[in-house]
Amino acid sequence: MHTLDGVSKSDQGRALGLSTFAFTACFAVWTIFSIIGVEIKSELGLSDTQFGLLVATPVLTGSISRIFLGIWTEQYGGRLMFPLQMLITAVAVWLLTSVHTYEVFLLAALGLGLAGGSFIIGVAYVSRWFTKEHQGTALGIFGAGNVGAAVTNFAAPFLVVAMGWENTARIYAVVLAIIAVLFFLLSKTDPVQLDRQRTGKDAVSTGAQLAPLKNIQVWRFATYYFFVFGGFVALASFLPRYYVGAYGLELTTAGVLAGLYSLPASVFRALGGWMSDKWGARAIMYLTFIVSLVALFFMSYPDTAYTISGIHAPITFHFGISLAAFVTLTVILGFVMSLGKAAVYKHIPVYYPHHVGAVGGLVGMIGGLGGFFLPIGFGMLLDTTGIWTAPFMMMFAIVAISTIWMHLAIRKMERRRHPALATETHLSDVPDHPFSHPDENAGVTTDAAATASRPNAR
Image (cartoon, rainbow, N blue to C red; front, side, top):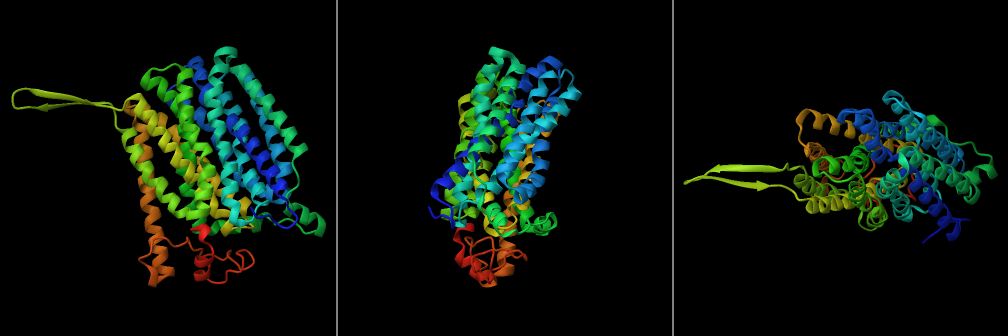
């Protein structure tokens, strides 16, 4: 693997390993309400809408905070921001155990949600250690820290049964604080921060960091992430409740089955990064959306009995998804969503190498907001329709709209920028904005050259 000047492979491995480990812990904390929330729901007698809001509240903080944490990481470095964010989150998780009313639970959940902001800190920090040819793979490995959701789904139910949800939260808080200290002691300052210290250069201003956000391309990436990440967070939180309610399973069993979704939706992100480096991010996004449509179609089909007026007598038959088939579909869905998450973030350091914090923060924020609004929507659909599979119907509609919008936008861009190649479907997502300068894009001076010289950003 190629390295930057003055950066060794061991430096790269250290930064990537520590960041991935820390992000895994943060993500486990971020999704803790998917398990302890079931107990809280029972204790407080919450409706499905109230439960959806409780599960989604940490996601709100984790989403909105990403754009600010991204900018601050660009300015002050991940070695400082990562431990600081983890320590503040650990305090919030510990204080959660002293809460007794629903309204205060919501306030405590806002503080816990800072754990979700760790993602953009890690993206900005890790990307500084790798050349652009390998950033997709590196960020894919880092993003596999989403497996923290599976850790919570697998382990937290047993901790709750054995020790109660309060002690489970305390254990999470202590572990996160320890990891924060270890990260600061073992990590190194990234190359960009070291260069600024040597040369006395000022960090990029907040205004300059935010400048690319006026580009529609950034918002297009954000809408893709709304499903692949926001949908992942929402389903990771919702599936334990779904298994308990729709299939009558015990919480421990429901947590394990939900973990079977979260695991491939996390660990294969590294594969998605490698595939994006090799075949292009656009191809991976098409794969993600098309397979998701098929999986969600069957997942959304309610358990139904049909009666047909036959010639001699009514004919009745039944259609429904068995538990085994449903779990299999969630594994497939999680796998392709994992690839899609990596594909979205492959674009950012390539097209916005000096604005990773701000652009990545915005994309992460929009994606995270999907994880906030979708659980609330799930709860409202369950309360109003009484159909267990209604949330998956909503997810199917979101993916269908996103797929059509992505394809039409790509074709329109190709016809406008490359009329002679309007029939091609494999071109790069050519940037048509003022932030693709030669010094930022390895000598690329024209859009045609960008297409030819950057196959890794297809």
